[in-house]
Length: 264
Image 1: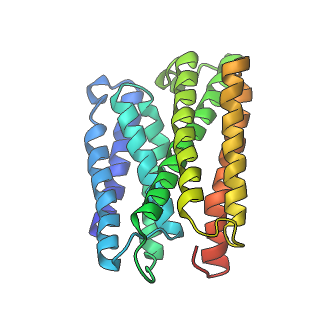
Image 2: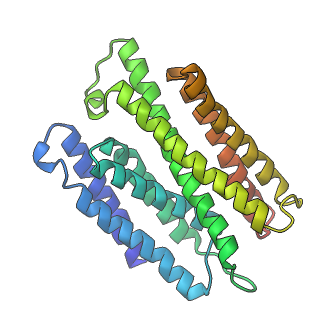
């Protein structure tokens, strides 16, 4: 529990320093990175210790949620250190902290039977990376929509200065979607190759919704390349595809584990 509190507090410290730097205190422009790294390390250790204690990789609902939060926070930190979109941490770090606290409060799942072999573990990790990357893309899409809306209404809020120019933000959005699409493609391929009974009753909804999300993201990337889709169109397609992905993974896990009390 100590590591959980350390991680949560340092996430919040990083958020506070980010807010301060975004309000014009340039002396603290990079100080947020140090508590962010500490928070990420503590967050990762929480799961490593849990897996060591349980004797296997824990992927129950709240653990998976926390791992996606960890992935989002890691991506945000790497992008922020590169000098782009550090402001995203103001949303992502508290979100990652909340996901970790929920995981700690609800307890870790228990592994049953033999541990997952490397092929199923590869599939699971690719899925978590894809969800984390595309969740960041969804947040970028929301920020793009808010920025376009404010500029269109000539509402020059202070927070607009924390965001990169519109074109740069849009470019970052599509690069993130492209990376997430590659990871999601690898997830589906490993699922087809390594997961037995992929269309079994408890997996069919997850499979169908994941494929629909993949098709939606793919259509968006084709539309961007072929027709120059951008702005509100890109935002709508991104959020629709992400909604399908959330339903595919967390929706199915929620029903199976928390409502029906069955293993995923």
